[in-house]
Image (tube, rainbow, N blue to C red; front, side):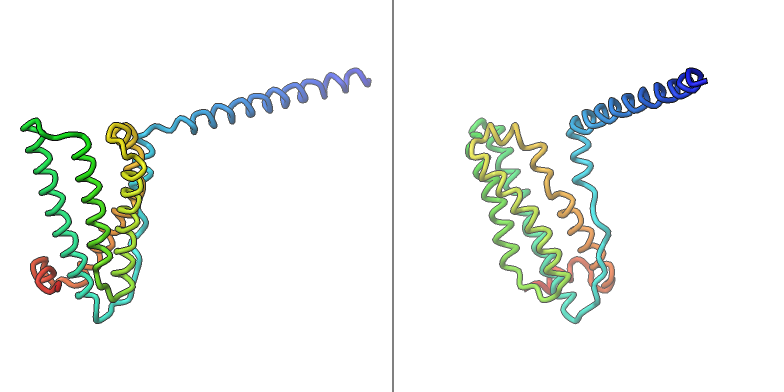
Length: 194
């Protein structure tokens, strides 16, 4: 009778142990797969943004919207001018990697300086300013760590996406904020900026 009971217990025990070993092996495979996250997946993770935050309206909203909009337009124009300059130099064959690297570092520092100069009066304005500044601080750190242009080019794709989600969130937050003041056209926003 005991032999029969042992046989009955032996089969479930064997089955359970094989499942346990299989599960352990699968978790190891899952860990290996997680370690091999593709660069495209990391970029997509960086692009995930937070939902727009709700802030109470204040009398200074339009002032801050105007300053942030003006900053965005001035910085975009400055960046476009820099890219045009680098393209012309590249076409003429006079662009060096060192010069391009330095100009991009200067552009990043200009963004940070322009952001610091903004006299924002609202919590929402400072929140957006902080998100944008955080992105440019990450970029400045990357350019300062990679003083060699060749090293920067190799490492740039993955690292330069860091903080991009916060930057995009700042843009979404500003657009949402602007949408609360439909009477304020884009041209009025920049006119009222000091």
